[in-house]
Length: 196
Image 1: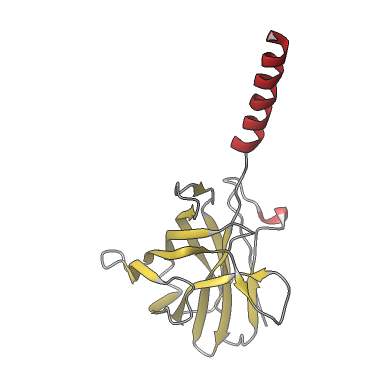
Image 2: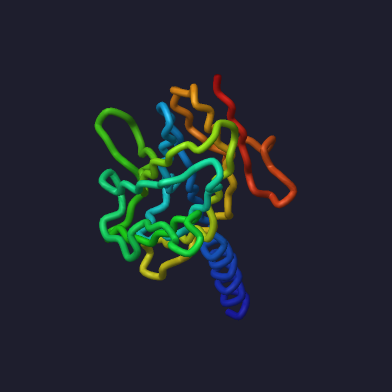
């Protein structure tokens, strides 16, 4: 009898280890478009199969290269903004946001393709001050699962190098998640793009 109880406890312990050690993944990345004297940056969320219902974070940028940010939320996946994306009045070089999606967001679905695609949190259009390369940093990213517990999805701060060349008219997707060649000593992932 005691051997059976020990087996049951053993199997429950093994099951608990696997259930409790589930890892969650999601990524926040940028999509850049340029036209004339403007740079458009879309902040995108790829849930990678998770159901996320709350998101917050901060984007910082170099004011020597980029200025006059105009923020658009019309195509956002966020239903309710706790803090609509806003420019920090004291520094004028960071944009913070916090929003929720009741019922959660697990990706954009369509009958035109299989599976899901990333969704846009919001878009920022900057004026270019000078040509070259500049850095945009996503930091303090906070994503919560729609699991009734508000489980935090780990997302690290990321730095992105973008081109501000004035003759650029191409669309660029910046995705640094899948190439380890761009890691720096702080384990942030970076990419540099120059377009001619």
